[in-house]
Image (cartoon, rainbow, N blue to C red; front, side, top):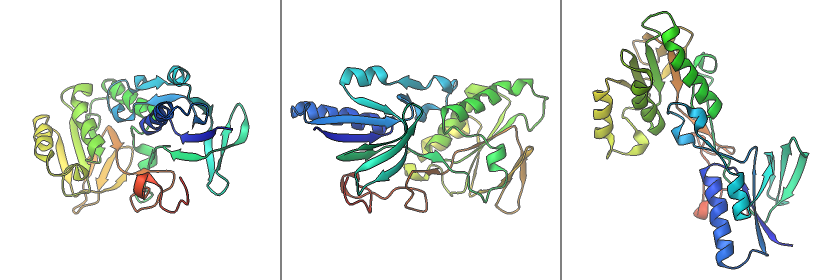
Length: 277
């Protein structure tokens, strides 16, 4: 019976893990000894880093032809439990219901999802995000419908919360998506732009934001949001009326280990606390 390398997820990490594993198997001529299996709800690759762009519903690719061409097995299902002691997973699918699948090596590449902190009143109800095809498409529809709304300062104001990589990309893309005459505000609780990007690109980022007329409010955490506007936490508190608020902060992985909901990894990307891959 061949050994099984099981990969959870069809994002970039899951896809490249599967293709890299298959390549190594072929190089070492182990095709009859090792099988590569990918588990995910659908055999689709969502180009998540580009969901800030116009028409986000097009940012998806069918992986089924690629899996067939490379002889990588695909199992449709949503993984609910990983049992490292028994080396199997419990997953649910419409085709098989609840089922188990064993593995010899496991790669967890299930991705992350946006987090809405409970301390920000109204966030889940009134904010948009671009975490998925569905949520990014909802924002896209809202932006395209903006000209049909009654003219007001709120209609012509968009606040983007989170001055990290994706927040900066979205903010700088918005002028071309919604045209002139719209106030765009980029808000972040940090004291600097793109804190995780380092100081190198910061001057270029600041210059681009300035040239596009994008307002930047640093050291400004969000206190609350309602249907009319957003209130910043810094003193004095000031409410900004808006037509769209986009939340770009915090993503949680399936197994959060740190205060930032990140998984702590050891050498060779082994999860801390796991006894075997």
